[in-house]
Image (tube, rainbow, N blue to C red; front, side, top):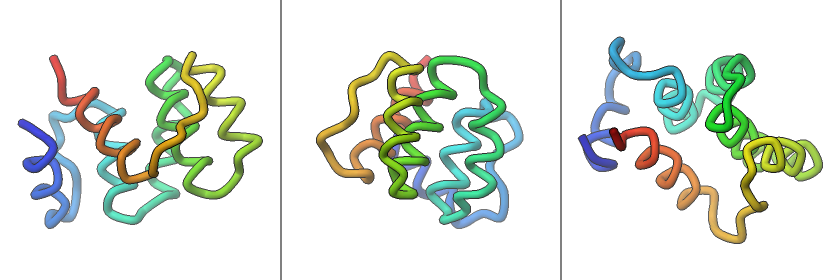
Length: 96
C-alpha cells in the first residue's frame, strides 16, 4: 500500500480494521475528524504517538503544545506544510 492507496480508503466509513493505531489516527485526521484522531494519538505512548500528537496540535494552531510533543517525539518543529507532514506520517506508518 502507498499514499495514494491510503487516500482511496478515505471514501469508506471506517479505517481498515487491520491497520495500526497510528495509521487509524491519521486516517481520521485525513477524513476531517480531528477529535477521533486525537483520542487515538493521546493514548499512543511512543515516539510516533508523540509525533502524531504534535502534528494534530500544530494543525489546531496550538504551537506551544505542538512544540512540546515534537520534543517528546525527538522531531524539530516542521517548516513545511501540514499536508506534507500528513503525507510523511502516513508513508512512515505504511513502511514495514
